[in-house]
Image (cartoon, rainbow, N blue to C red; front, side, top):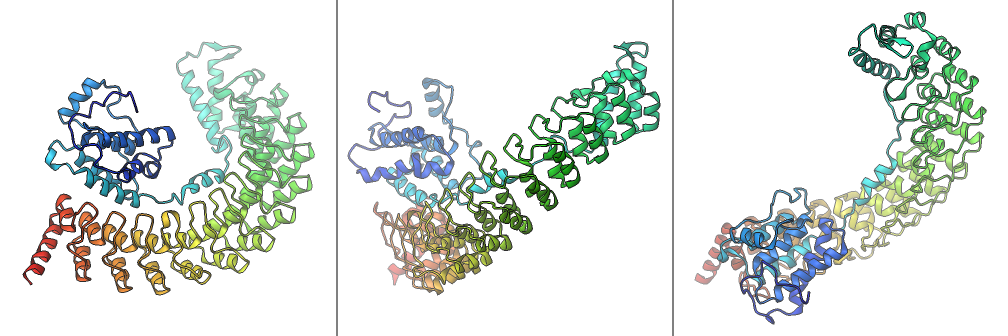
Length: 631
């Protein structure tokens, strides 16, 4: 940042250069760069690096202020530029006057610890200098927050996966009668602005009005009596023609009448729907035969590239599907997203249509634009018979869609035991890895599908396989509180203290997420209550921080070290003093917590409670210190 003018917020001296070592700037780097900012979904690496540089720069500047750090924090949390569009002089006036960036735009559904980040930020920009924390205190707090905010986004793939597998629907899901009513009502409203003596082309307004009323009232006998050849040329809203509307009535005689009067069998609406597409969509078999006989193009597609065969396959209409295929409909035609009729039939569990498609050469290896196969769809929806049929027709068991998930990954995630067992018994790769290096066992454990986990383990699934973030299946089951799954996985592990991302163990995760039963199971089976993660926090630190009273009691019952210290010198009592839980503080004191323990900045628990305005905790600690002194 050489040559950069000193920021408008750098006004008074707060520290002098050389007071802090390089290690002291680590937490600030974390806040503005990857470790902390990633939690808030900041995607631009350059921005993260710049924020990290700002943090270090602010601490090294002799004229640095507390507001500087808090503004950078606001920038990270909101992912927006502070005082956007305001010149430096105006910003200076705002800051001096006490005007701070808006807090309302901070997301309410932030990650654990977000509220503490905001609270620290507000203390840093407090108008009263005496109420602001020392920089040494900020370092300690940011270290704590960085420890708490570094969690995997374990469920991040679910939304995308669901979107990929969502039910496909045609451009109109309205009933045919509803479409006719809406069009007729709209056209009548337009005609109400015109007088009955006017004409529109060769058709009088009254004649049009009478036709529309007959359509609106579904009076087909009257409609056929008043029908004239000139009506065929009439275009309705969205380019519907009388040919389209006649098909929607489902009346073969009326359709025949329109055709004989010059109706175009391949007319398309503004969205590309043809009379044949409508007839297929609404399952009018006799009309389909008539339209094809009159020259309807069976492979003419709509704007989404849906062909008539797509609609027949989605509807499960094997009669119409066979009729279209007999007239040379393309069996592997793809719509806009790459779905074939076989995809749609598989998604909707229409085995009858699938069998028809296979007789005409349907390709089981066809993939959509995201490499989704028909077998993926059958596995995702748990269709056992469809899955079995696709496998017998040569579907690739280990095809990997976007995200590298195989059909077995999907069945394991969704909990479809019979489908998962069928895939395994048919030779699917049990230990295949998706883009996060999750195996099917990871996903079954994450979702608590114990039966699937048991079957996978029986057939050689690796219980020690690590994901890209170093999570094994036990970590995921513990985090989600799936007790029976945890019991099963522990039987296949020799070490229950395997560290995942940042060396978090299963016990850390279960404690942090207050999964009390899992905490008990892990401790009973020998999990180490004093294991430390990358910042030196034990599960007891996490229980103290989160107010997890029962988890804390279980840990203490299994010889958790009440005075274990983190890398910044914090004991569990320091953490509880900052978090403000009186009950946790009392429990720790009863178990021998050191009231005089000092962190690396010489803060005792009482001093931290006082600085964080946790008066009730401070009173308890003060009373205990007095009592011990008197004794």
